[in-house]
Length: 261
Image (cartoon, rainbow, N blue to C red; front, side, top):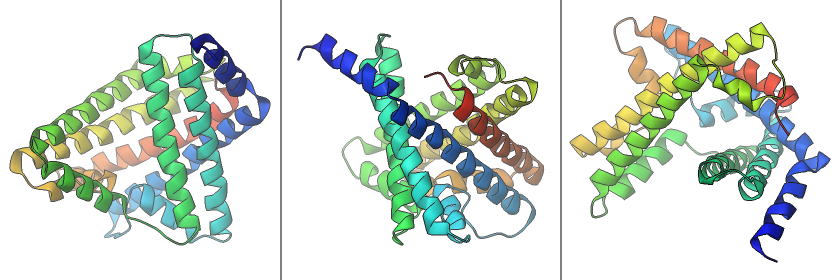
């Protein structure tokens, strides 16, 4: 089987109705995750909540609800389906290298989310923030590790800037097969910008950790949001970001219906 055959096979798998349904379920799962993240961020903004406002905190919250394990398994299946869909998109696209890298990166991200949700469903949770610190500490212990951590931070900042641009310029509408209406468009715009702000803070924390050789500074999303909370007018700023997460959840629900397939 040559390269063209692999591309055509991946394209057929990508277009299969069953996989498309699973991908749509994955966007619903993303919506649920972001809505819970928004609620957790609001709790940090206006109370002394100790819950982690990150993926692990969101999965813990879902697991604590009635039928929590079932919900987590559904979320895991959705993210797994979306990971496979993005992987076949990366292999089967006729676009350039940039499109392949973008789809491949998303496939890895959704696969990690699927695995994490499955672990929580099985009763073996983990801390996203601690994993981030452990990763930073391990990387920093290697030759040139501080430079590598700084590069990771700068890459995250770059992704953050792209999120802000994609939201502000409404470029996310290109991911949809038709215009979803003014409400969803406004939600997507706010959601992408808010995610960009949160990712930007996270990236800066990695750079600071590298500069100060202190891996504990490079926490995950929860650390980034709590850092924002500690700034002047932090509660108001974090509330805006939380509203953005909620808005991104709304956009994700709409994307489950309108996404290009």
